[in-house]
Length: 333
Ligand code: SF4
Picture 1: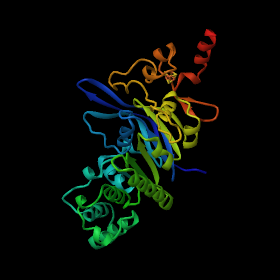
Picture 2 (picture 1 turned 135 degrees about the vertical axis):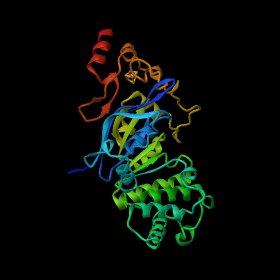
Picture 3 (picture 1 turned 120 degrees about the vertical axis):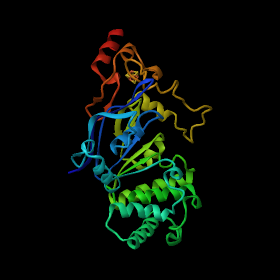
Picture 4 (picture 1 turned 90 degrees about the horizontal axis):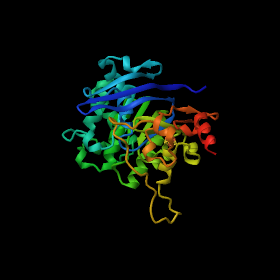
């Protein structure tokens, strides 16, 4: 039987600003099995990074506040943990890597010192043992001549190497969950492929569960088992990678897929989703996607859709799949 590692239930995080309340994450639920990889996909401002920061309780407060929900890691609610307990959990059980490794690494310490710091904080090891482990971690993430590179400073490494170092730091305490927030956005395409391969390999070798946050559906296709599509702080659709790619049901998911360039199709222009993600402090009435949706009707403009679980288990937040939509559209025929 599959084992749930993480269950996120009705999680909401708001930011209280001078301009009003920003509903960055609004009633989001999902789960993750042991060893599974979940892709969280959306445009900037969709709430995907706030989801990750809320899970590991690193939302800047003020102005941010987790206002409701549960984050159950092996049944224990992280939202009820003390700050001290969370420091232990971050690193030992849950680790995160960020988009830009140069800003995440400290420029005045060698990469070895930075890996060792994490080992010395979380494990009872001597400095010598920690250094040996740091070398092993660099070897594991594919850095050549790790015995030498362990004494390099971040600026002596390429962007891809630095991201490998970040992954080594994240993995040195063998966490159960690795959260990768846009891990390849700042890298060129060949390095991006190598880092994704490394994440896949780590997952297979160590059984680590992965949450991969990205705006790029292509990245998700390479690493994830399941996908959650987010828009304006809400989950719009869940499905397996195959389901999302072959049978997208939410108009936003379908539009995202249409905007991926396909090499065989010689089109003059790529599809673009008209309009912009709405301001999260001044959200539109009804469906949050309705100002950009080609299928929007009066129902969409006035009533917020709920997440509907369909007969085959797919979950979609769209009126199209409700009896109310059927009723209204049949009446017009
Ligand atoms: Fe489009 Fe209406 Fe569905 Fe929203 S609820 S995605 S506006 S069809």
